[in-house]
Length: 100
Length: 417
Figure 1: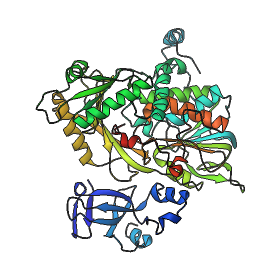
Figure 2: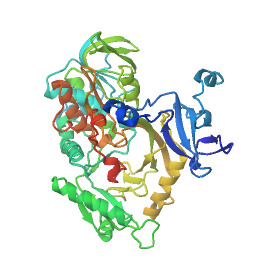
Figure 3: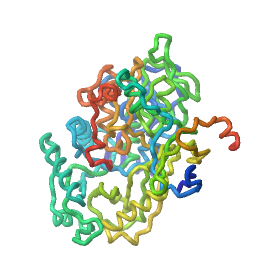
Figure 4: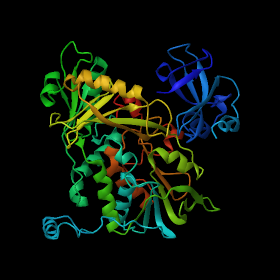
């Protein structure tokens, strides 16, 4: 079972308290009426599906209920970090350094 | 290739079965092919087989980073059915069930197809309404499916608990008698043998690292661990790794790869006559010819390439199995494993052309690819050979995510493939 650190509750808790919410840092278009069909498809459906460190969202659904972001290696399932929604994307090289 | 028949069996028995020839050679890559297929699972090997047999294209390489049939072909719960809701899906999956009927004879290889029936249990009023809608939709298209009362369910599959006070009461079930199971490895082996006999090279333990394109944008070939291989056409059929392979050609796909877990029990005497699925509680079960109960669950919730998955899901599945079949609640489980499934947002596959000329993709089968192996391979081969989709896979384009013409089986409730 995954142990996930909620950056709001500041606790590391079992996976069953959390709901996955797919890839992070996908911003909804500011002006939807100007968006082409291609860009809508990209926003709604296309995903990087990274094999390796993936920026993703989780929700502490059976706790504080809030969404937050995480970086997790999808090969090992190991979390590299979690951070609050709205925080900038952490630099990958500083996160993976500790693993080497 | 030595054909399997009574005469050859007898002849080889005379020499102690020591002179059987190899089923397929362990090929090394040539510098150039007409078609390179990435991924030697059932879908990829099957496509090579039908390209060689029906379209006269034999200069083909099927390349895999591991052993053939070592990915999801060898990791599924071997269930075959076609009781989908939408017309497009029914045509695709029923085409496959049609091909399953004669596949052992077609390949001269026993794939142990057994149409023992698949029963989908309804536990709530919503289930009843949804499954009856499926039954009607299927019957309109001539697809086998019928409604059973709880007593008829019990008669068809005696281990089911139909007590009124059960945790998951059985309010009826949809039965597709043409559905069933097959031996998953044999499907890969049968197609590999048939394709190799027609001149197809099967190259194992050779990862494709990138798809290379010409200056004009069309496909040039593939970079592999054993060097560059030139190809007129490249077809990708790499299940969980489709996103990674296609990204090297600059094509983004609407896929997320997630582990799907399954487990088997200790082998016991025959007790379970069919396949039973219970979508509301997300568990399904059948008994293999070896006697093991083969149990499957839903996918883990997160993107992962670990081929492992988490235990909470197994606990949930086993809890459901123990409630629906109390007779099994003291049974010991032997093994569990995970396969990496590539899931589309509408839970329907993508089979067809891509924005890159001469590059084709067969992906997004999610948790339900095994049942479709012959049908998918058949229409994918057609698409590659003719550079246009077969009428059956024409709706399953990558384009549909731009046009919005989704085939939304995900919203059709029977999501446990």
